[in-house]
Image (cartoon, rainbow, N blue to C red; front, side, top):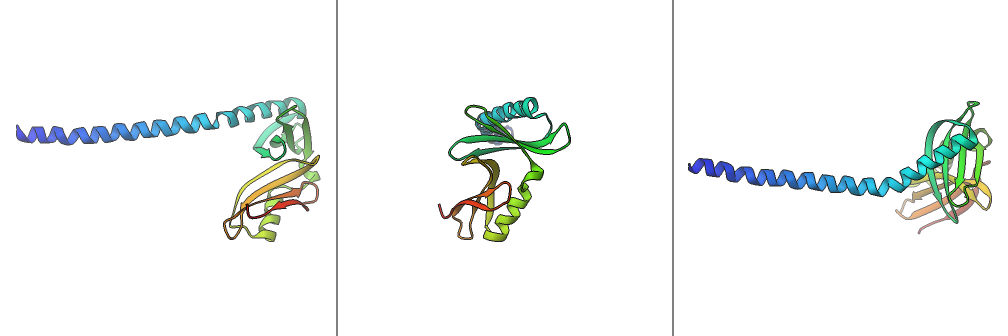
Length: 166
């Protein structure tokens, strides 16, 4: 009888622990899903616009660029099998189609930053529009762990703007 009670007492903490772990997991998943909903919705809308107005056939990547204005960019291949970037303004929906062959690639932009700045870590890279010119925005941590931004001209890879040590 005594051993049965001890056995039951040991099961209750295990059940309680399992319930708490499951609740924590469900809360974390819910927060993640709710937090990503606007990004996923923007992504779906941008891809639909790129398919409609730029003849996008295959989607490879999606970027969000925030500077003076917000731009959504869909990278992919059009119906002529050309690599393109479709840059869509969040407000106004103005669309600009960039042929990848006319500018530097994501990897070329990253290589330039790594060679020039030797960052501790690159946090983000995204194409966008700055002063009516296509750019690659690279966000990184420098050797000292400070946040830095650099804009590279899409066509030639030259520095457009740099902000160090934020």
